[in-house]
Length: 322
Image (tube, rainbow, N blue to C red; front, top):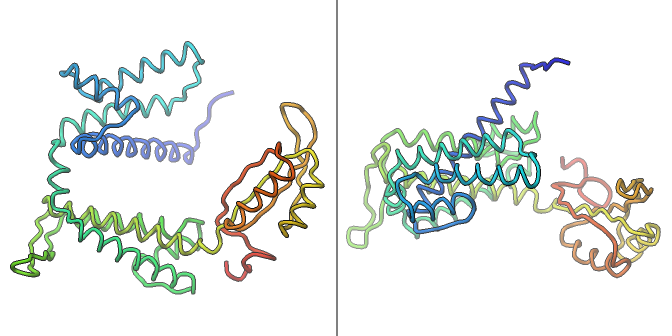
């Protein structure tokens, strides 16, 4: 049977490998341009490669990381089995390549120079302002309104695809923020002697990148606040319980926890025995109390707890709020 590739599978493949490439660059940039210049240290192959590079200089950290990962892959293959996917090998190769690129073309003092322009007081103001903006946007969304701008883009996308408002706002605002690096602008700085004064910001200057730091923090806080406020009153947990006496467990949940329960047919694939799963949905604030009751009823019960973004119907939010 031949291998057939559709245009969709090819596009999905390009998307996956493109995103992995971007992810590996972010990893390399964070490690070599941010963590190491700040005097930080971490674990993993990158941490071990950094130590070896300090002891035996002359070879880049990315190359050492590649050698370490190859050795670990070979050991894992012979001992555990060759279960590594092509994507794992791809990420290892690209991560090492990106680390070498960052080490060669981005000086170690780049990020320290940029962060020297970041003021702690301004940073706190940005966080506080972003939280306030996010609260306002979320309240408007929950009432069916919008503050305009990229909020409308978020509403349009959310109409056709189930993507969180915060994520859409984050991605669109990131594009605008990056574009601002290439234009001249002005900002204001407070000086104790001269008071508030205007400062010209040149494109791609350290001060321009410092403004980007503020911007990324702001849009991250706004996106998080929007999602938190919107889902805060809807967040619930779904508890799946496997126990010996499912009827007693369901009765206990009904009488003591005053919650409904759903019985689901199941089969344990290891034992091949038929069993029943008791499913309960409750508010997050009630989860701890419910888990204590389950433990009292059957200390040997097997259960999982998962978060759900929204629960609609009797006892929860009305469907007309969707």
